[in-house]
Image (tube, rainbow, N blue to C red; front, side, top):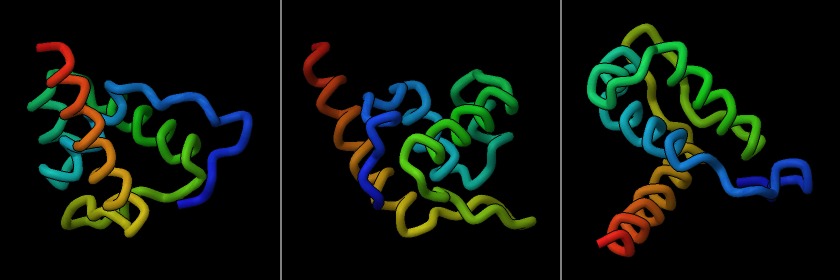
Length: 91
């Protein structure tokens, strides 16, 4: 995964990371939107912002669904771990 530029060095939005994980799990923006109660355009925008932030394509978009790229899989692993830490800290 490329190193973020100074323009994108800030932390990504946690809601965007949650949306990424749901789309990766559901392999569909529509299904993810239903699960996390966001609109499809909101999830699409979140994914686009994450792709710009990290400078990498995170999904291969196909008629049969959305499939993680290698960069997307790496980000999902890290996002899952980070959100787990946040959840644990909130307890």
